[in-house]
Length: 143
Image (cartoon, rainbow, N blue to C red; front, side, top):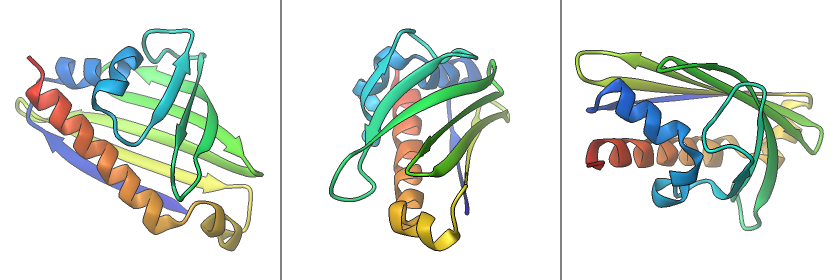
């Protein structure tokens, strides 16, 4: 299963990047990801961080590894839970004082039926759209 969504943000690439990568500010704007903990202030290649989200009634706690960081271009993190492996890419494309952010999350390690039971596609897609809207609002309204 692959879930891909995108959003156009009317802000500079640096502003969008800072908003997304500074973990200490996520609680101020991110309504999807909660209980974030990290030894770092920002997303850095080779590091780990933890958070929870609620794809259904009960929270799911995730430990993630940051695979790749290319400033203002790409962030990739991955993790596994319940025998399911997920890899999440965020691509940042500059376009005339705007940034297109593409979120692409792929799941593997289980049958599609099992994945859908644990992480229903419709619910994960809705959460992805919410995360992108939160990022847009925070980056465009940041002073």
